[in-house]
Image (cartoon, rainbow, N blue to C red; front, side):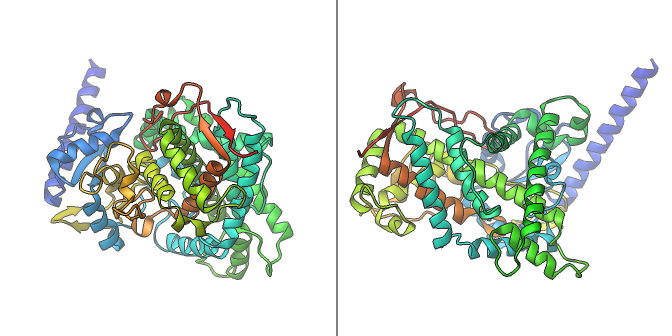
Length: 493
């Protein structure tokens, strides 16, 4: 009886707290949304494997700005290009806060560029953009690194001798090596066991983040920390990755020449030396470790997964692959290394690569933003500490901007004269002040690696085009493409 009484009392308290919350919701003039239950909010209404699809469906009833509850956490969802632009661009100062995503907070210890706000975020973002630019992001230096890595990739594919192989780890290696050159000043062999284990940790961490278990951690982190599960193993492996980064930083400190920085870590260490007597400096060890971790994590798996998805698309649509090869043969030829200068002469190829990114929809809910203060938006009030979800999925599938939003159609990026045309709703990297800091690098890698691959190889799979399923293997935080064994047949020699 005593236990029953305790449970009833706890239930009454929870109900009263929820009623108080709903009353506060009315006082704040929140955006509309579906009724929510105490403690669990709207979780039962959301598709646990693709919550972004449920949010898009809810917007048909509640509009482009709606409120949902992820457990006890209030979230405002922005749906469609107009709502995202109005918030993230036109009211950028209001919406540039970053939400405390528990998985990333735990992985970064709360430091670094991705999860920071205010002065820390401003200093680190400004420094990172400047440093990446100085090392050639969008310029010649970085382009040469990617061109060099594309040769290593081609050599590795030639060794398959047109037999069946699974490309995931090879593509992860080549993309990660570009980040390694940028951050660590070195590349690694595709057969390096330690390197491969680190890449597997990145892959498994992102896969976990896109699983229902990972989403539960983001909603109930304190509870999940007490429960057994795979998240403890993931975090242990992430800590090993951080230890690898700390070791590399120590090596850089031991060999640093302030007059000749070799990479991102060197530049950060030089800035640290310059500001070591400034008590408010953000250029300290914890921010360096977590920023390098974030660059390494984001810059490896997302781009390599996009390239892997691109190969699946081209196998499924062999006529598209053939037309791209014809265009590449005409402009680049069989021998010369492709360059970014070629892009303007490859309109169909460029259109296909943009359409692949749109169709993949790699981060459908973006990284969450956070209301750092009460925000007035479209006649509503978004209270301080509300999570804000820019639903990129809705923009990349919006009928207003895409004639066939749910199917592969390179014509979305071609005008009536077959010239490449931009589309404002192409936002796979988000928009505004919190857009992906590595967008220019990712675009360059996708273009140069894929043009180089199609210049040298024709891709197929044992089951034929009809065996390829382009729907994601894992959804939720990220859309992870399915894995297929493929064949890379050399085109020349």
